[in-house]
Image 1 (cartoon, rainbow, N blue to C red):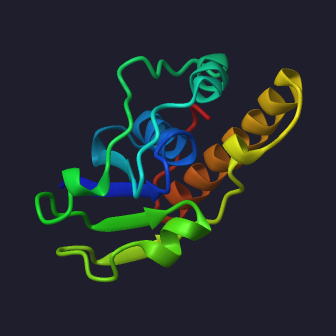
Image 2: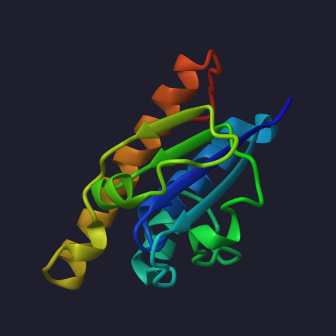
Length: 146
């Protein structure tokens, strides 16, 4: 049986997009994975760049709002990846059996040079990947590709 997972953050421009891409890569066909934002802002160009560095093509990804899914798709897991989304997410979401919160810093809010911003996006990307792999291991799903 396929498990549906929704990753939620504020803008759906970086963290939730990365989490979606990593779970698709490492969870395979066991999961139907989506991401959304409370206030979609468009995919951050740095997200695309740092994910390409690890061999993940984000060209088909785009920012989606929660309205695209709320009341339309039943998810077993709703995973918020930012504190703001955790605070402001609808508390009742039909069908959700597990609601999890994984707090990640917003790389898009980081101020600095282009190289410093890229470094921040890489740091958050690597933390999200590690958390996805840890969660899969907790589910009894090991992945030797990581």
